[in-house]
Length: 476
Image (spheres, rainbow, N blue to C red):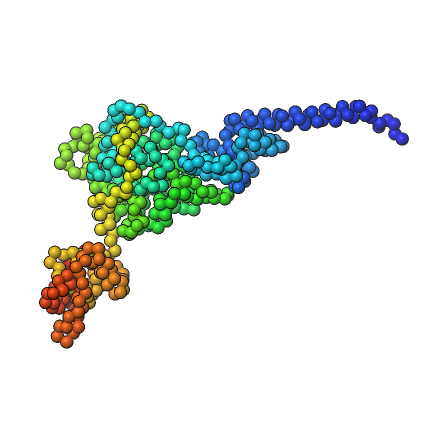
């Protein structure tokens, strides 16, 4: 027996005890480090996504995978530090099954990432007139448009939980009327880090994380011909939307944004199909030559009210632009000024109720401009003051000639006649289809005076030329 290697039992016990104490002390050190880390870096863990959510400098909860933590924080390279983080998070109630953004109450096991503690509080007192000038510019100087925009902004602030019920505001026409100024600078004072401006294509893409928790979203430079209006209307019409970050599973949040759709197109930012889907859209049109600089010049007396337009080449435009850069911008981004203007709006519309979509003159204008060729043609013919009747074949032939002359592809005869009947049901219920024998021909007419004597009035609508028949009836 090797007696030299025999260690007294009491010494071995003492060393074992010291080892246990060292482990406990190390564990306590890791816990202290984890507590200090979480004090400095607020975060939660969502088990369904197997992902941390850290509060960014912009006050937004950002998904962070565990493997990337060590790249940003050296503590995460220490053995067993992540386990210490989990223990502290469990003790503090920071472990959740799922995540959402919602103004409604959620279950105790769901983390609600909504932030509203930094919102600007309304104040009493007079506010600078430049805010009214901005509303005048955005609303195209139409009282119904200006009142609607103000009502939307006031209701959005006072009742944010109804955001998905608010109509989207589509402003088109003249550029530079102040849409970006309103969203990115003025309303950014009201909702810090909760306003965004992006192209419609980006917002409608699969990775739409910029929409998460936003209070106002400007979809900039939309084009009715390029945007998938079905997807867009689905986005603004849904109370909940899926957020799909890269590298983690998607999750469901409230659709918290008021959407403002911007376009410089004369024909509108969104295609109107005059169906139930348009119930979520408010339409405002700004005249050419009337950007924000024009209204500033008007308000400051630099141009007379008789002047109806201002171009970039004119000295007054440059003067207004320079004034806005040097003075105006500071006025509309001053928090006290914004708070007083906000207070005015909230008080003014306190009893106004939920805003309904604005379908005024501007809506009708865009609807008429975007009307399909067959609808515009039918409306022009049947709506003519002198219209009495037209033979069906002449009506169809005239439509096809009009499509040829304008480079459009015509619809079929069945769809065309169906469209005539649909138009009549809505706008001319007295219109009937009758058949008359004229000579040896049986002719069918669309007629608003069936008791009258009908003749073949083809020459009223069609004439002949070297290239064949051409349309001489009402133009679209």
